[in-house]
Length: 325
Image 1 (cartoon, rainbow, N blue to C red):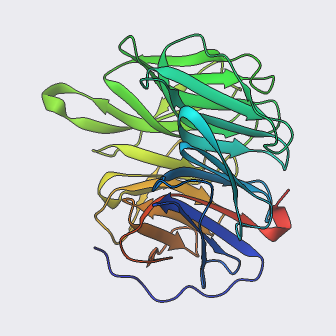
Image 2: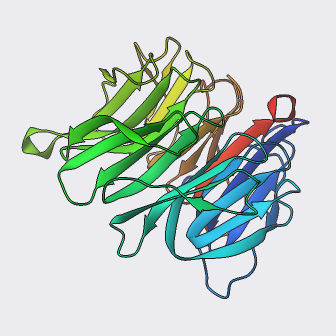
């Protein structure tokens, strides 16, 4: 396993959360210098939490194996309820009231999209007109959002979009099964990106980045130059972004993805689920095992171990107090 780097400097008002298994959440209020651990309740099973999102320094949600957990105190305590047949992969929120959760139900071939407009007190199921597995979701406001998924009945992957909070979802991008999509990011209602990989001749895997600059009318491929799958992406604004993936790869752009340059991660494990709280402070999950952090826009990265040995980390979220909603 990678060795942890030097301790991160304490930053007042810099909040970070990580979730994983079995059934735990980490929280830091000083940019990752120190951590506290909490355990979502109301289950006797060693539940895995696969996704986490916070709309403010107090209000957040974690989702996983048949469970949605909510926190109103910055992750110190969690209230959990069970979704009987759901396997929930990802969560997005835009404020303390509007939350979306995606995953699958039944045998895994039926999509599951749950939405709440009251902070998670009540949830409604949103209709998706295809059998599919959903794996990532992002919203930029209470109306505009995107999801990525894989068609369970045919050789397709796709991006779904909504402009009415999820009351209606429609396909914006579709590709053959030689392409897989794994991560999603958006900076505003016009700019969004998805990453994954394409399988070519001789089983050669190439990193894939697709993007829109017009709200979704035209998804276009951006040249990654990477051999290997890309598994996560983050864009804190429309110009600055980071794509991460197999073997510790990190790619960065300063022009919305027209060109990408490699950054040195210092690890050779897979990276996924990137997040940036601003243009300099970012995080990525290291192969379900720990976190990678940067304090300088990716010029250098540090391995962080926010917890106990033997625990898996699945997702990370970060906010600065000044920009939280």
